[in-house]
Structures are given as structure tokens and as C-alpha cells.
Image (tube, rainbow, N blue to C red):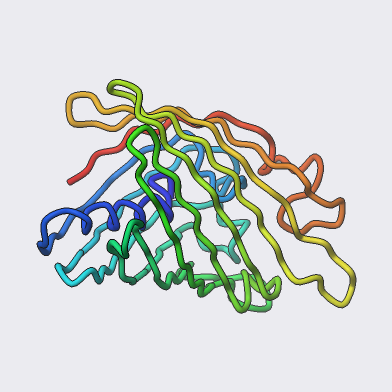
Length: 237
């Protein structure tokens, strides 16, 4: 979610680090390209996105998030609708986030099997004042029908005046199947974001490396994995 899934999870953790309270919040966004782990989810075109979150003072949270996607990627479904739940809060000197997320694609019409996917994660982050650093590990027992999957994400945010500079690196690892297909690849991003008149603005450069010629997610020359720059306007509700 760009507002992405990690940002929402980290946002809930940040909220819970403050005074104890229960809160319902929402978000909407318009992005020039919905990029998820280095891959365009809507064939390099615009996406409208939105979500709703509930955070309890105990640290538990639940949420719902949606975006349009390219229907040729997900068995004819043009909608991604994610549901997630977890717990976030301070544990000693760091913030911890553990949770579950389900990627849902309603009204699938093609393909031999559905691509709805379950994923679990655990993340740890630390605000050093001059920068915030976070690492999250994700696991799925069947990543979009490709096999056992893991994803590892390292992100750094640096506040500079009214702007935030961000950099991230991620590694997708899918168990090699019987045919020897290698779906592993890495993604990276560098971006800047700010707020003005109640709106959030983000400009992000995204790319991938390490992809295999046999990859079913990313392979050399695949357009949805090309380097790109995205622009996003968002609003917290």
C-alpha cells in the first residue's frame, strides 16, 4: 500500500507508542503507480486507494485497505481488498509489531486456482531522533500460489525540516519449485514526502535487481518490474 501495508503497520505502532487511547482512522490516496515490493500492481497506471483502521489502547489493531489492480494479474479481479490484524507497541527500547494480513481479490473469473494469500509478519523499529530504522520479516505458506514465501524489508526514514527522506531495501524469497523456477528478486526505493494543507505528498523512485530469467514475478525486461518514479497524494481522515 503506498500508503503501503508496511507503512500502515508502522503507523499504528507509532500511534500506540503515545498516550493510551482507542482510535478509528481512515486514509485515501491517489497514486500514479501502485508499486508493491518493486512490482506494479496495475500495469503502470493510476490507482485509487483507501483504508480504515481501528487501534485499541491494549495495542491490538485491525484494518481494511483496498486498491484497484490490473485484472489480468489476478484471475480477472480488478480489486485488491486486504484485511489485517495485529499488535503493536513498545517493548523495552524498541517498537514491536506482529500481525496477519490477507490479500483478497474478489470476483476472480479465470485461472485454475484463486490467488488470495495469507501472510504473517513481525517487525521491530527504533527512533534514534535523527532517523528511524525498521526491519520486518514476512512469511506466507503459499505466496500467490507460487509456493512457500518470505520477504525481508529494511527501511530508514530521516526527517529534514518539513520533509521526510526515506530509503528501503527488500528481498523476496520463494521456495524453488520442482521445475527449478527461480522467483527470488530484490527491490529498493528512495523517496521524499511532506505534508501541505492537510494533504500528504510523496515522490518515490522504485527499482528491482537480482531477478532470474525464469522468474514468474520479475524477470529481465518485464514491464511491471521496470524502474519507475511514482507520485502519490494522500489524505488522513
